[in-house]
Length: 593
Image (cartoon, rainbow, N blue to C red; front, top):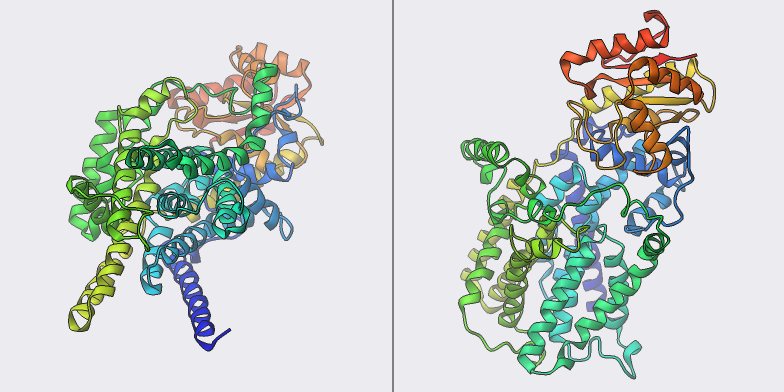
């Protein structure tokens, strides 16, 4: 190895270390990590509770306590649609099984993976180190990622989005890539594509594999129409085949369950409306409007009022599709790609010695507009949603649009820096650095958990369940009210979805009525019993050996809360002194024995 190569290697390593340090510093200050109690999950509501439960379920410590008294073992037909998440939890589990630590580490590691993946692809497309550093950092903690961290953490893990875009570029630019035949396995890029395909297939709960295959189809279409032969699309189709091949083991159990009439978590218990793809589709306005007011407080307040009006007037049509803001640099790249669609250019990708900026922007522009045509409200995604209902959150295509935009802006900046020298280059570099820094600063602050509130609730729940366990026997069954479907029930009055998981998360010796698959024997019994008058309910619970009732008053209308509590205490035949009260005053344990 020559000295020059060693120097380049050390510079590369140093840049990567600086990138890691920059992400760590950003998380510490922008996420306010000094307020974090590592033993308490930073999220503990709605989908946050669900993912806390997923951590415990990964160890098999939670599943066996749910869905009683008619407990059924987990279905053998469960799909595994995010193996990367499972692998991470299993790895951390080798060192600690503390739910809070594992959960918090997973959340905090995601931006690191995103930034490093972005940096790698920016470097592989020819961008210099400091540009790759800046754009990788911008992508790693882009607004979509921060907003997704607050609930759907696995969707915030967009580390394979850059590699998906890279595969499209390779299919278009490299005549030797993805061509079956002799020497296929001698080409490093083909091996990398197989590795990328595995990661894509096991990331994003089927959404990101679906979108990646869509963009590969668009790339194939461009190549076929240009060269007027079907063989031009072979690399794209082969890459799609690799992704699908990796997905088969993940989803084959679900297919078997459907054939056997048993189903699985994805096929049972969740009604997917055919209009879901329209309801949760992409809003172009959300890509362009900053929740932070582009760094101006007055503009942020005005936009907040506008977003409030949208939520009020449009109701269900304004939902998670509010997550998608591209950031200042992303907006510039996005708009430029749209403008370039009106510029005529003979697309020569794969026919030149080196990839040309114009050819790359040509393809990125078409991928960009294809994303809009697929995912925007009342577009082709809505038509597909009539038949394919499990894919409905088309707004989740946002990180692809963000990466198209950042890659376009970064490649243009790289060419400008290469083609200019002297004072002009220096001024451009300074202005670019300032814009990148301002854009990165402006997009922060979209993820700040309510640490103290969550910690208070967590420890209160733990203290409450300690009291309940003190007056019950091991393996006793607890009936939870009100009834809540598992999963995606929706909120009940002031009780969020998945809230009934709070009790099982804090008990390792009791069984609970909540958590059975929707439509199973226990779930049907659970729902029907919860609808009985108090006296009949208590009679049925005692007949099934239930030890007590866990009552969350937040699930009832305010005017019905105290009456519901009094009626159940009377039906149970116990005194008020026998009832255990949660520190919040909203949760009670009513003994039946």
